[in-house]
Amino acid sequence: MITVPDLVVAVGPALFEIVVAGQGDGEVRDVFLADPQEASTGQPGDLVLGFGLGSPEEAVELVARCAVGNASGIILRTTLAQDPEVVAQAEKRRLTLVALQPSVTWAHVVWLLRGVIDRAAAPDSPAAGDAGVHQELFALADAAAAIVDAPVTIEDNQSRVLAYSSLHDVSDTDPTRVSTIVGRRVPAEVIAHFRARGIFRRLARSSEPFLVPDGPNGIRPRLVVPVRAGGEWLGSIWAVVDGPVSAEVTTELSNAASVLALHMLRLRAQADVARRSAIDRLRTVLRQFSPDTPLDVRLPPAPWRVVALGSPAAYDVPQELDLWESTGRRHGWSEPQLADLDGTVLAVVSDGDGPGSWRWLRKLVIDLAKDFPGTTAAAGGRARGAADLPSSRAEAVELLGLVRRDLAPGPALRVEQAWHVLTVHRAVTSLDTTKLDGPLATLLRHDIEHDTAFVDTLQAWLNYPGQPQQAARELHLHTNTLRHRMKRIGEIARLDLSSPLERLALQLQIAAVRTEH
Image 1 (cartoon, rainbow, N blue to C red):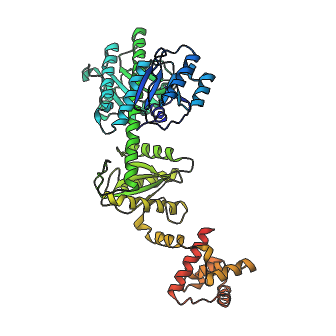
Image 2: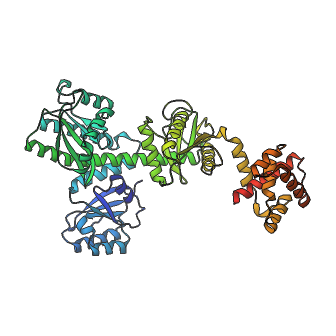
Image 3: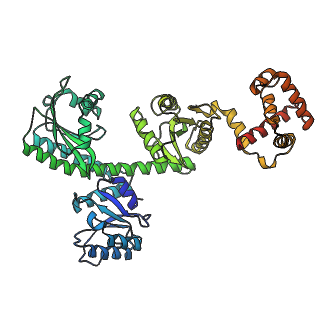
């Protein structure tokens, strides 16, 4: 299922902007190209496209008809979507109104949206649209290569290769292009060279093609064409050339970049839909898994661990999820198994070695925490099957809470290393401190009424059994003073400190009181 806000988020601000957030929670199943001369305006599940509207009055009338037909939303050109009368009508009708940038045709909008909607309807099917977009990208690379008569690669804004031309022999290019195609991304040393020359800054800011001169290690000159949509930099076309090219060729490549921008938007949107679907399925497994339910998430071989992840306080949960995914991929985890659940980012890792394992993640977190304090990871117990994942998740979340409160050592640990901390924490949190009885309640009242510190004294004595000198140092007291206080405590409250059970009960009660405060 995908809604109008989901579509807008998936495609991004390059083309669409929500002007009026209506009910917005209805499923979008298709797009409907409305004609102002026709009475029909779509039906529930349709996202209506305001094609051919000539005035705000026509747009107001179409909004009203869409609301009557219970359409999921309406898309209008920006000038109409932002007209005060149109906005007022959409707000009155509680209809989601989306503005479309003027730089794209309605036919391309239909193609883009239907691909995303189809992908949402069948997220596990390779035939749902993204395979076709990849094929079209390779066709566009060949078309661009024919225009410039040179080998071409198409890259996204992270220097990952999306497609490359096949019309030229390997001898027509240089080692950098070969490495880029084989590795599916530009080599790190080449990225560093281009970054030092300001190439990526120029790509991010400009829409004009430019020539990159030759470089070290046989890097030949390249004509670079930025690919943008609505001001957003999506990627670029790189053509290996011998020198400057004609203005006519540059113009044709710029036109090809405009078409390519729509394909890249569709590919990104479909990938976003697939990612959301995978996250939803993983959430379901982590929340509650039934042995009768097939496991429809792609996990590494068992056993697993669920890890609760923490980030610096400046990030919210969606940002944390994006941050951990990009961090994992950057350090070699090709398919991060991540989801957010009840305000916590969770990862499912293997219990072996290599990227995506607990050992790998633990080292990564320890390294990150040196530069980014607040980076933490807490691993639940080993899950030998999918039915064990919810309990591993619960342990991980509980342990992460203790790490964040400095009750367990961070930045990364697993439940087996903190079993004693968890045991005490569970016992302590089960106590109702409003109904304390016994000697501790008497001492607490005495401390409040007489401004004494007998509870602190008793806690230190219990923490260091048979070591009065150490307990005194903890309280910054002389040993004789400590003994005098303990004698006074015995006079105020009835204590039997020779009883192991009574000592344990007192320690748990004191810990519960300290936790409350």
